[in-house]
Length: 90
Image (cartoon, rainbow, N blue to C red):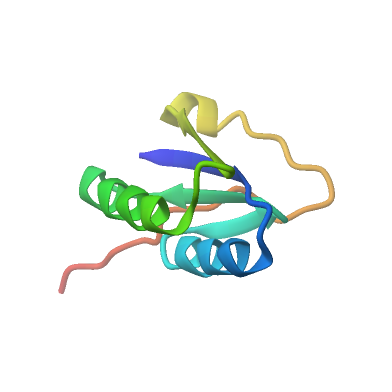
């Protein structure tokens, strides 16, 4: 599933830790926005890791996009939307 994760974290240490965690699941597209193409298990692992980092003062939002909506993403002056890596079975 394709998910956009947006966050607002006030503390530099927590924000940096969250950014590093999210990089293991997706790609940064703005300063506090990531795109990730994950399966359900990866999503749950990511959310649990995020919950361990943030506090009640922080905000994290998950926006789930269907494939049709994902194809309608328009980008001006940035890299294209995150693509699912092609897997080859040999």
